[in-house]
Length: 489
Image (cartoon, rainbow, N blue to C red):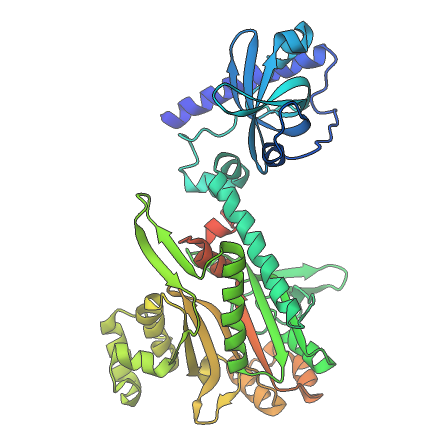
């Protein structure tokens, strides 16, 4: 019932605004046809205050207080708000009357002089104004809609209009990506771009999105990982490369998963998984320090009480995958029979199906019972070789590979490994992963390896999950401007 009343109220306000638009046009004013060049931002005007200094600002009208022969409005741009004082005596009857046709949400250009009110607020005394956009819908009210997460995600622009803290969060996300680039470039990495549409999706085990190329009359796949093309560049002679780009996986949605997500992948010739550990630890620490000014990430509840604290100060903990599993599932876990492991995993609450292979049963125990407990930065090393067919085997234990998963805040942030550069072993392991389906093999990549790839370390980092951790967000949708949603209707 409340929603119906809101829609009725909104429709009535839209009609009122349309009437004001028609009245303005009848006076020869086109609210969409004017140009105005602001000379500074609201924050700059406030920061460079001088009594009587002339300013030219532009922004959205966010508050309006009519006092008869004078009016106060708040003008807001990306940097903040500034009060504007309009007097009938200064503007004249005609302009002052036009001023009364303004509504919350309209965009204005204003010219005037700075002064300070009796209450101590820096204000612009209006000399002239230009209507730049007449809004036909009222801005979001704090009490309606924006507590509804679907509206926040589906109409993110309203969320940004109403919530400065959300706008600041996405500004910081942009800074995080910028600092990642700076860090890698300072270390000699070259940023590159590789195809998002691929004939064979590789580099991970995931369900791809399929599209059709009309001119070539064949199907392509949106990439599920960046990896294999960057390795081709190592073959070609680039020693340090990285890419920040989108991956696409046609799988479920959750608080940690979105079908379209942003990844960093970086590859360093003559490195290995330990090289990537140092890179990961240094990179995340650099970003936290530059963007947040601290290595301690504190999350508080609505009352201001600390609910979580993550300390990124190095060195980070290193622990083997098998040791963590033994701690949680029993010291004899890897000596037990596959049937006994399956039975014990189910008793521990791990989600397993009859189709799970033995290594996947152990993986389910890790994901359910271990990973969520790894709040402080932890490098989980030496994973089962079946999990990562693109990594080198560990010399001391050939059932594992030289891999780590960097876990922070109870989730994987970045896997990395010593890259497999033996073309014969790589073919064998990819064939096993493909289950004998030859069409799933990326023969061009295997051919590239046969031309020789230097030993290398490779890193993949989920930018969205990194932002969740650094910015204290519990769901991936809160760090993606426009997350995937089912279309209305």
